[in-house]
Image (tube, rainbow, N blue to C red):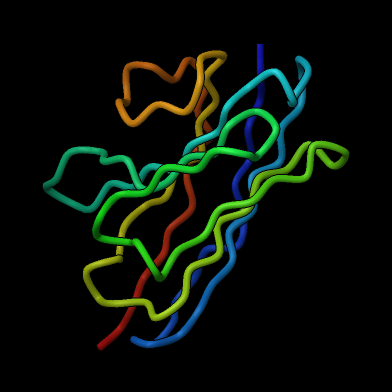
Length: 123
């Protein structure tokens, strides 16, 4: 089992920045590719960004390219999501997830999920 705990969400004005963290415990963190997903009210959970086990490969949703970056610190068992130039449409609950495959963009590929953290961007 892998336990994931997100933090860092909150309320920010449009154009602002937030950094989310996801702390992992349980099995060896470096064995897992990590992803961030988000879910807005009335919408399905969607892939945002992902990073491979050693951080050499990242994948992005088109909607966040150039604004969001992902990084990980395997020594700290933590993955980060840096969000810049935030827009009201980025408002959602953000979830981190772990998969023992490579970087995946589909929700079903991830076996472990955090509880989510709310990000609200005001206009």
